[in-house]
Length: 66
Image (tube, rainbow, N blue to C red):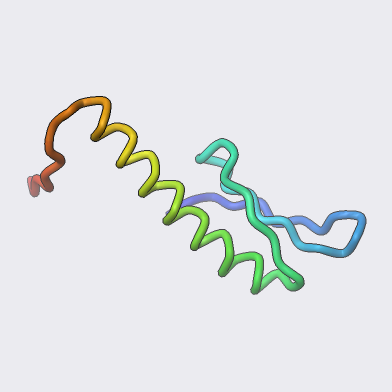
């Protein structure tokens, strides 16, 4: 779960900004569209960060259940 700020800009476009992921912002013509778009942006952002960290570590990422 992520905290997302949603606000309307001066042009009437709804902006969705993930507060916990700097630079992860999306928009939409409605609040609902902005929410759906930020979900996709969060997913892409997370995949990008994971890929970048994996390449820096030059290792393999595994899931561990505790």
